[in-house]
Every structure is written in structure tokens, then in C-alpha cells.
Image (cartoon, rainbow, N blue to C red; front, side, top):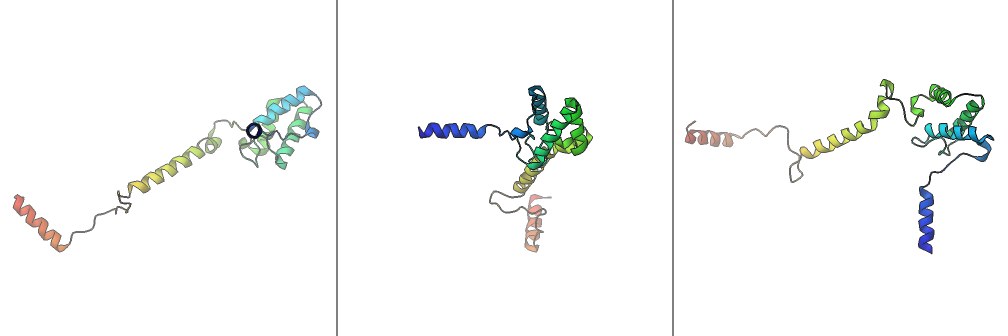
Amino acid sequence: MTRLALLLAALLATLPAFAVEPNEILKDPALEHRARDVGQALRCVVCQNQSIDDSNAELARDMRILVRERILKGDSDRQVLDYMVSRYGDFVLLDPPFKATTYALWFGAPLIVLLGLGGVLLFYRRRNADGAEIPDEPAPLSAEEKRRLEALFKEDGR
């Protein structure tokens, strides 16, 4: 019985937390459905990768109310999204458009991961099997080593 309760608790914990409060819900179910659709497309600017409908942040609540106000004024879903983008920028969209001003959003995280992997690879390439750092240039030969090398060249006939 305890296992079943733990399993149910774990399953409930994985469900998205809808933060829309009852006093925010529109009376017209069709308009509320549109508001939910628009809200799922907008990012909470405080919580990063949560939609405004999933976020409990105060700013997300303000954004949800703003979305509902725009819908009640007769804006289309596209107009509401455009309005939110004009206020918060393309970052507010969970699926931002692919254009020059959003390249950092699209490529920022993979670029940071690649730079980190390159740094780790470079760190380990500069170390030998014992873990000691390999110098950039070999140490110069001592006088004894130079004499021995010249003797070897003479023996070899070079």
C-alpha cells in the first residue's frame, strides 16, 4: 500500500503545475481555451523554460492577466503574441523565430557546451599518461647531450 501511495505521489509530481488561479479564468470557455493556448506559447521571463500558465511567479500572473485582457478586447491569438513580443522581445516566445536577433537563443547553449567540451579535450591532450603537463617546447639539450648526439651522428656517418 505504501508503495502504491509513493508511486501515485511520484506520478503526480511529474504532472505540470498549472498556476492559473480561479479568479483569472475567463467565463467564456472558448476564450479561456484561447488564453490557455496563448499562455502555453509564452515563456515566463522569471522562470525561464516554464510557460506563463505553468509558472507561479508574480510576473507570470501579470502576463496571464494581460493575455486575457487582450483576448477580451478582441485581439486574435497572433495579435496577442505580437503584443507580448513587442513588450518583452522574442525571448518571451517558447518557440522563438529563427532570425539574426535570436541566434543567441538558438545557438547559445550548444555553443557553450561545445566550448566546454573543447576545453576539457584540450586540457587532457596537454597531459601525458601520468597526468603531468606536457611542455609546449622540449627542454634544450645539455652540453653532455649535445656531445653525445654529435658522437652518434659521426658513428652513423652523417
